[in-house]
Length: 361
Image 1 (cartoon, rainbow, N blue to C red):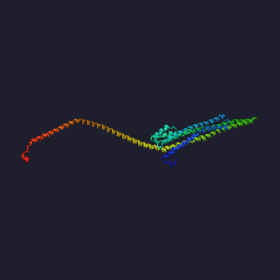
Image 2 (cartoon, helix red, strand yellow; image 1 turned 135 degrees about the vertical axis):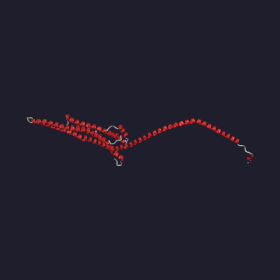
Image 3 (cartoon, rainbow, N blue to C red; image 1 turned 30 degrees about the vertical axis):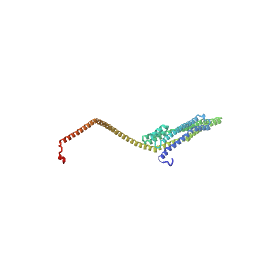
Image 4 (cartoon, one colour; image 1 turned 180 degrees about the vertical axis):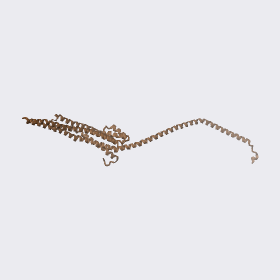
């Protein structure tokens, strides 16, 4: 990790990227281990020819070699599966990395499910994300424990296969030792009996040679079985233990990334989701209230429009009466004017005309 990396970037690098580095080592180890089984089988066959050129005539030695070859072929296919698993896990890492430091959990889940192959790391991350989508984080530690248990079972299954091969090889070597020792008893017995006759000296030497051959066979089977067991112990077991330990480092760092990065983000996003949900509920409530008020206002406006329309109709129906009333009022005013003229005329006729004195005055 660079010294100038701080904050969430440093936390993310120290866990997720460190797990990616261990995963790259796993890919390298599993790739190189694919080239070991065939050379080991060829080396075992060559060693058999060196120490016992006629070994192929002995079915017991064939059994030891076939058992060792089966173990190496099984190791080849196991490494092939592990190498495939590392490639699939790297694709999952790339998909998670593309989601950024604050991924959208649902979109990230869909991307991982649609674009990455199945592997144990993919399954673990999908379970974490599914729990995170529900806004829960309390079950993450329990999921990690279950995943560790499943990994232990897988590792024990791989190692137990080679343990059985190794133990069976050693037992077959020990069984060959017992067979070789058993082969010495009859020649030694005949050697003892041969001393009783005149030709016993030559017979004794022949029986002793047969007994030595039996001892040699016992040592040879023990040598082959022990040598093959050493190959299994030093190479096969060590390689698988190294690969499994690197896988465990990947998962441990991935668990740390989940605890210090993904889990806080789930809690934060869940709180924000709750706030957003509450805001949406309030908005929905106010929208419903506004819709109801709008509905009431629309109803009142329709009622008011009906009243205005009725009033207009009534006003329009009163227009002829108003016009007629205006005519009547005009006539009445004309009658009043004429009446006043008549009154004035009568008043002038009643008042006497003025005299001359009054005029002079």
